Length: 80
Length: 504
Image 1 (cartoon, rainbow over the protein chains, first blue to last red):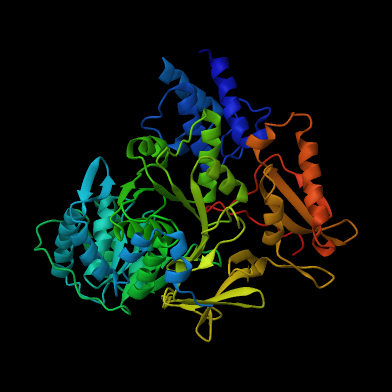
Image 2: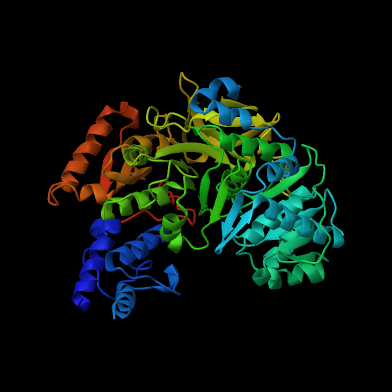
């Protein structure tokens, strides 16, 4: 899966929970600070990402991921 | 208004389960009886280990011995400082079954706060998880508080004490909705009433499988999860990390979950996205509270075969005041009041007195809290003709219109939230350029439902539904401006909306 495909799929998950506000996001977008995800939204993001990509966030807490790019980095690494 | 549960709630319960409920005089008496009755059953599952009722009692007896060795006796106050864990459970049980009052300290407190609580509540000892023991050092040095590890061993087991109903049982922190967080002192009688109330409403209550995701330093976690489970021979699985919740569910297969609406909504969205009930096929009941429950959630979970019961409660009332046994018929209601309490509505505000109510806020000025023995909840409420209770807002959130008419924003919001396209809403008073005050509405769309509509038309469809709801309201309640937001409202830590104060 290419980086672009990963980010597109992440965008779909963000859109589930944020609706229109996810439009125009970038890899630099902050999850809680920038896009305004709540702690429950973050939980959704983590779980939906694990299910969608078939990966598992090990040894990393929800609050350790700050930007869309950091989530994409983690997914890319986990898929290797 | 008083109810006899045997008559009123009996028809919603399995009669055999109702007969097995016992009104014990204290939590100590309950635990003494239930730990024998269910000795071989698994009480707690935590960190890959299973602990039977007998094992839990044996471990609590050792901690009671350690407390006694530290000079703690009945009537003393003992802090509990531990995250959700088996260690918390045995520490809490040890303290209350020795006849002490357990002051449940949130595990995120820092050292000075632990010291502050020790002084304020007059703690004799603190039972702390090993990792949190360093936070107790200041209290140990300056307040001479004995610090005992949840893993302490070596003491002689101490038997369960005789404890009277009026003896203090627990000090719980309030959520601070009405200001700063306070410590509410609940007697054994109050907590036992809360435990009994936990059993009313669901058809079956014994031998259930609870999955705990709520904090045990909150009454909803402590009473409605832990103590409700231990009173009914049920097993409580402690989910250590909410990130692992759905893996834990797949493994443990809970039959009941006690969660807040935001979590129920998130689980529903995930279930829809992945085409399966992510809370598991064994789940029968969701107990939902701590915030207003959207009727949409009740209907959607019903489609998945899960009964979602809203309820109403306070820390000051040992959690549960009422529970909705007819969620599909009356989805806006928080249900029928539980027994042994009186409820009255004074100038729209709900007042309560009864066995479940706290004794006092410890060390706090209680001006305005009570009136003639009634606890003033600050919540606006009404009853319907069947005796079902409805919470319509907070008294301090009331908007007084220039016409003198009162508007409860929450009551109006409930009407707009009934639209499945609306995730949440806020009604507030705004001021025009000419200084004229008017009611305004902002809504956050429910993305999953909006996505089912043609993208280009969705906002117009939502707006048309909102206008239709608005048009049906009495003229003085109608909002003059409606705005569809593209982001959620600012929220407090407990996920409640931070209300606008545009006209103050």
